[in-house]
Length: 421
Ligand code: GDP
Image (tube, rainbow, N blue to C red; front, side, top):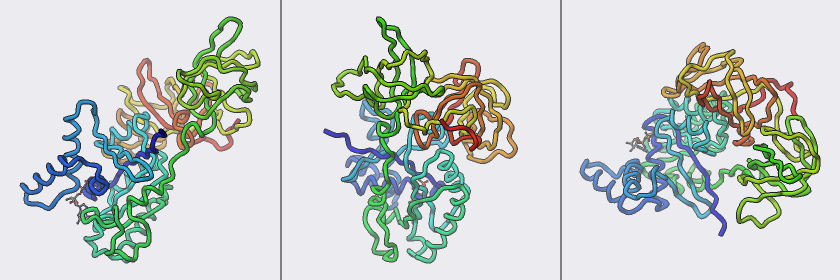
């Protein structure tokens, strides 16, 4: 049985613009909530003398799931014939940012919800900025509450223009703008006859058109060395394949130095593996033809792959959790897969308060729970990818003294003149 494809999405936007209602509608219309949760919402709405509130389904679902014993966080899931969807819950933006940057949550695509009557608000802008900060490029703008503007095409066009002009500045380029009324279910799972001028797909169909990222095993090989063991006369290189595939006979290159060799054998295998190839996620041991001195922290790639950066300077977006503020020109330890080196922050370019998402002007340090765009210089050259290209080798942690104090994602090279292997 092959596992079904799963796409993780996050729904962002100004409070009250309809995020929960959209999610509730998607769940309800795809029959993804148990009957008991629907009954609970019906009862609450009746008591309050209000129409059925789809947004309440999320709370009711949480209640239902709490009664189970195995689930400890609410799993908001629904399916189409094509694949499964998981909505990454963003209870507080601080948690969301922390989880995204640390790798605990990994949303691939986003819906930015804008109220048609209210238009773009400050929070819509901040959320759009967060998407760009996290490198989420798959974005649809959902213009909700179209019923409040008489389903007008003219007004929709005005809003679309307003939104796209500010998103352009952030380098966020939504693939679609979808006019909906979540409340009435227009253009959510069925095409609306109230907006015949809209020629695109309803939201649920459009979701299926998000192209999924390549699976890690289909990306270039990244095999960071964890340890080298001497075993009889053999030197066994052990580690975990972060991405790609590897087999005996493959020509390889060991970075940062660029030594070239060939895989002689795969010596120890993950259990239950009877193929002659190992792939992303597996811990393995290999021997190579040349007796180089290899050490922890080096990264093995395929010989002709020139995509892994080797540099001592890069730009990053980081989330700071340290007890002491992050400052420039102080030595921290940086860990990126199995690499460890000292580093300094050489510039702090932008700091955002993760709770309010407000930009802090002229900040020259980063406080606990702030997010920052920085440039980092490492003592020794290290190997890395942009987070967009590879989430494992594009993510790092910073250690202050003995405490893990921050996590970050690589947004790019600091200087385009930097060498690429
Ligand atoms: P959130 O804070 O972004 O999650 O917003 P909610 O989903 O809680 O919605 C806020 C309010 O807007 C609720 O009272 C909803 O009933 C209402 N609402 C949501 N979608 C629509 C819509 O399409 N049309 C109208 N008229 N009201 C809506």
